[in-house]
Length: 550
Ligand code: C2E
Ligand code: CA
Ligand code: CA
Image (cartoon, rainbow, N blue to C red; front, side, top):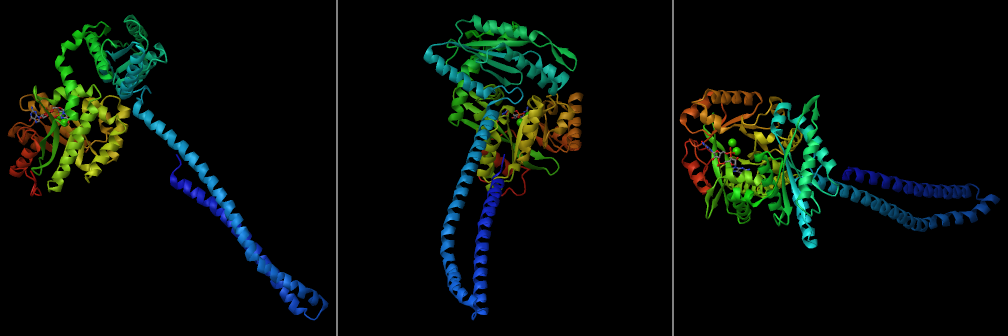
């Protein structure tokens, strides 16, 4: 894309060349006129008594008159060249505006496409699919037409990814996408919903038979083995079907119900299942949570708690992890372990993360203003950072509070970092370039390869609390803790141990050279006011924490 400076330089040069040309013409003409006049006058002076002098005496008047006339001529000529130049300049501007407009439109189109499509398969992504379903609901309600959603999830894809590596896993996903696309008419949109999940919207479905036939055709299409590095791989899928209007009136419930049907199909190994109320009744709490979580976000009913992280060498608190809490008026405290995974399966994860980040950043700015200079970690999901608007919006929130991005760490679980590796790497690099810190959470549970790990632009690795909790009693846990500390340091990463519940574990971690510790032994996650009191009274209080406000 042409930059503004390129354009400016080009145009200035063009104008300059024209200005110079007209300027040179003017100078040449005036110099010539002055020369001619001077020559005539001097000729007249030398030949004053000759006949020629008499003749020239008349011409002298003519030459001087010519000189007198020149300023008028130049005025007219100046107006003429000015008009010509103005005309050229306007033409040039119009031409460039057209170019710029075309480039802006192309760029807008591309960024919209990137935001709504999966880069691996070029299919619409989950967010776009919800829009497509919403539009279909809109037009089908008016025309009283029915449509179906097929939600397909590959069986055993995780094992394939682990056995052959994520790059090869990506190749398989591409092939699966191509086979599915070959099956359905172009008018029926298909999307990649994440990892190994695909969804199809079948238009005009007079009966349940149509989607079930398509499901059978999908099974058939996947029967032929996939070829990967001369290895033949067999893949099957479980498919869930939900119908509009029978199974839901909005995009969220329809997709959710197709997904519930898919889970049922997976459990029973039946290949596909059409949604039935009994699947929803399997888990009424889940449905309740989904509906109420949306309201809780909108009404700001969630709360952030903060759990300190201690620098084991200096013996002071240097950062906190922000953890979400939902205190439901009827159902009491609901654990993030229950509602975050639910939100991750729907569009709710985005507003949820935005809420956590904004509240966290605001709190951090208040602490800094009060002299409590801590870092903060916020948990985010892969689904968040796949959104191209995520990073710019985050930077804006940080800048609005006049904070340095380096105070914020984004924690991403090892498990989620392992899907779609090439793209993940690209996204992480971009976040890293924005000076944000990145941390691999729950390390040791995600089967990452060392080669991949060493490429990730991360700053911190958090040993999963299961290993820390078990390290005194279980030899394997202990080995994993020690190995992670060694590995982390070799890759120049800070190593955090979470789930530190006893003084004994803390001392042992310190002895092993672990950098940071977090856990109930130090403090449980606390709401802001209690956390500030904790800092004041704590033996790990940082020296600069003076008058910290409550
Ligand atoms: P996590 O990121 O691994 O967070 C650490 C969890 O361990 C927290 O549970 C914390 O309370 C708990 N914990 C801390 N110290 C100890 C200890 O010494 N012993 C034991 N047994 N547990 C300890 P919590 O707050 O219930 O959060 C659970 C999970 O929910 C988090 O796991 C994280 O995956 C998710 N989560 C929490 N808040 C958010 C959020 O704002 N956004 C996202 N995307 N996920 C969140
Ligand atoms: Ca975490
Ligand atoms: Ca963790």
